Image 1 (cartoon, rainbow, N blue to C red):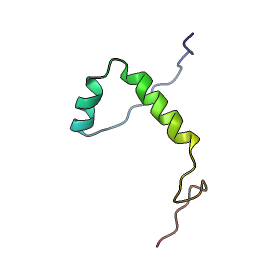
Image 2: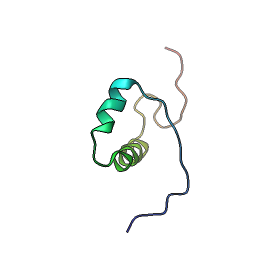
Image 3: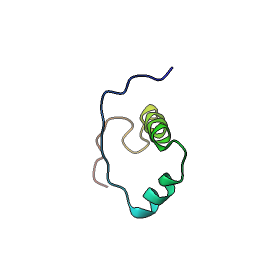
Image 4: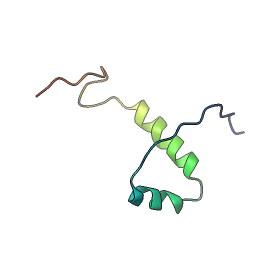
Length: 55
């Protein structure tokens, strides 16, 4: 079963990445999965605080 999608977002990417994504059979699913995996990990730089101090 596919979950209902009720929001659309737009991002800008460079031409090379766009060309690679165009070759994928289900790029929306790939992008959703990549975003979910990235959000599940803690940032090694800020430790999950969302703040990176200079230096």
